Length: 470
Image (cartoon, rainbow, N blue to C red):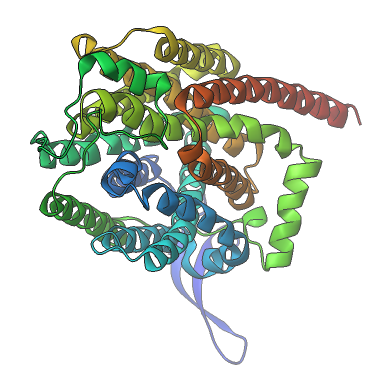
């Protein structure tokens, strides 16, 4: 064979090889549009597929007051099973199969609400939590995988590519809050009528029952919190199952798989556990946990606390969806901007902007005299909260992908599991504390998160300098 040519050959049993096709030397051409197109497909799938669960956050406690919050708690507790089954699911299903598993489990979760049997519902929620955790971890890995491919093809820096791809993904994905809540708002559009057996809300008394004075364990009969009729609930649940089915079909038809690489390709639960301990302790990822909590607390608070204590209490459940749509639009515009802006101002500045925005919103909840006459308050606060949430969502995820490019699966598992642990704890205690105490708790978590993010960055920079000197 000519020495400067490469041949595709056919091997024979005797060890000889027959040249079949002459291949010209040089690297295989790869188009940058391939990872971009896959990113767009993944983002659109999550925009539609995640909408039902996103919307159930702000409806569970009202549509199903006896079981709703405990169902959500079980969902997030189920995420801890991922430590046992995660390595197996990763090897067997890959990223694409894990994402599809998430849509199937979500449809089962919604279906369990048609005729509630507590133990069946909680069991389904635990299994859904495991599948959902595996799916979201796989998504973080998938986006990082696509960003690294894009950086390799275009010779861009991994840091910039990760910020860009995470920004695009979250820009589209966070619109899930629009579609799911648009469906709920249209289905629940008819105001709930008050019969002779219920207390008609008095606007003068609402300020003492709603907002920061709201307590889940107190009587809400003097507020606008009411349950819609059962047929309306069934229509809503059926719509959510349809959205999950559409996401499942689109994923199976158009999304390609992404195989695990190097540090991702763990072989056993023991090895996977050792890698997680190594990341948490030796690579100081423990310091990142309070920063990771910021994304979790942001989502939890606006969906579960603000919507019930402010929107449903003061205006009615039919306004919940519109309020969260404003939050989703804030998420959308924030993701568009900060995915690009990080290249010029850095993550640290964006984190400070997000924290400042959150504090302004929280202080307005404590001290602003809201009422039905100041209805814009119920939609402006979620919008600005969404702007801050987009920074936590995009930049925290991009930061983890940048720091641990060869250990994506365990790193994103730590991220998601820690978020879900905090969320499960919050749902476990939400029925026993009032909103003013929750607001101060959120303030403390934001402050702690900023301090720990700063400490981690300083230690990481010092470690890199020390390694270079050696």
